[in-house]
Amino acid sequence: MRIYLFYICLLSILFTQWAAAQNKRLEIPVRLGFDQMYMAPIGKDGLVVFNKSRKGVGKGLVEYVFRKYDQDLNEDWTITSVVKRNLPFIDYAYSAHTLYLLFGKAQSRNYQVIKVNVSAGFSEKFDFFFLDKLSIQQLAAVNNDIYIAGMLQGEPSILHTNLILKKTKILSLSFKGRAYIESLYLDTLNNFVNATVVSLHRGETKVLLKSYVKGKEVRSIELPNEKDKYLQDAQVIATENDEQLIVGTYSQYSERRAHQGLFVGRLTAQSELKSSQYYSFNDLKNFYGHLNEREQKRIARKILRRKKRGKKEYPIQDKILLHRIFKEKGRYYALGEMFYETVRVVGGAFFTPRNFPQQRIPREWEYSRAIGLGLDKNGRILWDNVIKLERVKVPKLYPVAMLKPNADSSCFAYYYLDEVFSKNFKESKEGGEIKSKALKTLNENDEVRENIRVQTRRWAEDSYLIWGYQRVRNKQKGRRKVFFVQKMRFGEE
Figure 1 (cartoon, rainbow, N blue to C red):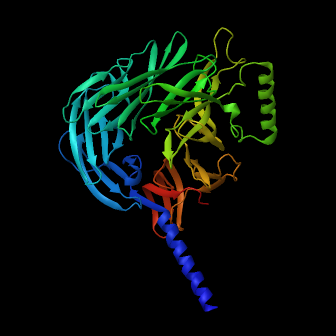
Figure 2 (cartoon, rainbow, N blue to C red; figure 1 turned 45 degrees about the vertical axis):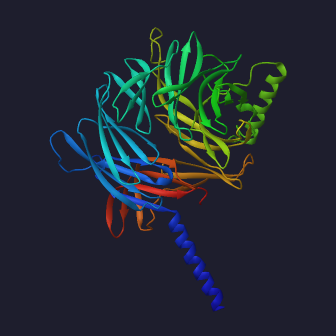
Figure 3 (cartoon, rainbow, N blue to C red; figure 1 turned 90 degrees about the vertical axis):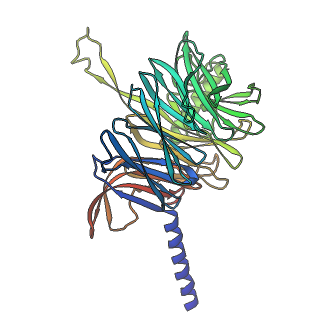
């Protein structure tokens, strides 16, 4: 009997230590409203937290403190760097164990780049002068080459500069009509910087894919539209034999309306488009899985009725916010939130005279569900699944859901209004119920009074990060205001 009790105690101790190793928390005391913290998750290399210090370093200058943490949220090193006071932080990019941080002021010519070597723990500073009226929207960097996408004097532009040579040039985009840069990102396999340019010319949307190496264009391809299938955006990810997989969205109409489905194709080493396919959301097994059984049957009847009559597809009423495609264990995965705009009307028929039009003011975006898909290297959809996003409304679009694929059991997770929601499933099977739990600290005596500006990001292996600000009250230690980073595991209850 004593032996059994000994093993039970030993197992409980080991389980407690294992759980503590999986869930970690980092806290930094702050003054809410005064101390602004920034965080850069860098995957398996850990994360970097940085902020302005209160130390005086000279007129017109400000000191930033950078702290590097490993996957267990243990501090590796701390360094400082000085930046001009009138240049706020804009964005960061990460590649090859190097973190690039861009500081600058909107519509200004002066910019600074802090280059941080996260392995060795040292930084370098570079000063640049760009053109006037530059509005920066996206940043990518690799091997001392900086790519900046934004609006320059009202036109979409991509700028390239080399940190060593300090030469800046505007890269050619070659589009017709009005356009914008949908995305700018690094292909880590071949060190290409890819850009997606979406243009609207004569009422038709065109999608242009471009790739750059050391500031030179190495590929440019315009994706063709088909009848009742107009591409709205696209992105690429490297596969085998110098080929790339293309995943994008399409609409039934030339104007940018709701997204009807996904476009998937294969791009050869010679920049030829092969094996292009259109997957309608209506044909996915679980696209309407967030609805009850009665509503699913009603929509299925409408879809079948339209097919029999030879009409256009049953129209989707919302769009998808497609995340970056990622690869894991030889397969490719797509994740995105379906959303639509909710508006309110100022005035009304009773209060507004007939001669004065009612004004529709965009209020917020509402997410209905997140959908995840698994694909092979040829773009064939292997499975799809969905998680309902319950009453998730945001004033600005941003990725909410996270996906951890696994052969045995995959997991959706998302955070909203002080709670973490998760759902376990296996490929296209219905899966379990959505579980929720309050976002708490790891101390039982703590009471979280308020969560402020909380963000989430899938991290390394089977974990994800939640970070933001909290007001916490402890029965023994009193109240505190902290910037926190919490490591959590997918699938945990």
